[in-house]
Length: 255
Ligand code: NAP
Image (cartoon, rainbow, N blue to C red; front, side, top):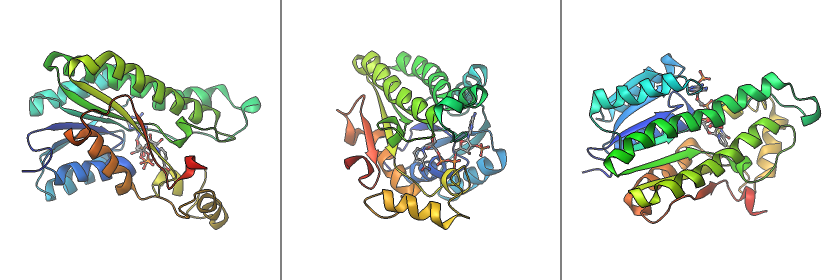
């Protein structure tokens, strides 16, 4: 028996990076996995990898910025697996870099739509189902930038601070209904977002070195190191943890 045998999990942003690592970690622990993402190719790869680990898994094309798409995602999970026990609201984008006084409103809107409204859309649909059963565990992906500031990322930092606040609100509303809602706050993790996104750490050794130097651990984290925290927050081993923002950041925020 795995930790999540007979449990059904939705993971957004599961085609890549932290979401995929969490999907595969949950698959190893026996969960049935709904892989939700905009990227069908990566999503189907995650499904194949989860099935190789013995899990039931399905890809659902979902855009977290669109409430109807998220409602359809939750309906698909219920139709396919009959329940929803676990959710990881993880889809996110880095967005453009730039100082606040010159930041384009369109760039702001795009980041808030995915990183904050996306988490709200997911929470709304998932909690409605979980409240009916009086059970569930949800983890939202915030960031160290949900706790501290980082110059040139006004939208990203604001969106992730919003996710921490939203997590606390959802925990307060649901703690008396058998449901836990926590957030994970990763530091710099070696995923496409960091390696190929605006920081371009893969092709820019100076950018990579600067990230490593700013992290007391002296290295980037691995997606699996975030997945471990999510699996623990989902599990009954964290049964009294609710409304918490858990840093997994190589001591970045301890400075
Ligand atoms: P990633 O590898 O780029 O994965 C993010 C996934 O989310 C991608 O598959 C992406 O699809 C998908 N996505 C983007 N917009 C979406 C939408 N509207 N609806 C559904 N899916 C969407 O990045 P990651 O590093 O694993 O990031 C996962 C989460 O961790 C994000 O919330 C990020 O902000 C957070 N985080 C990451 C780090 C880090 O250092 N990597 C640190 C702190 C927090 P496309 O590829 O098609 O866009």
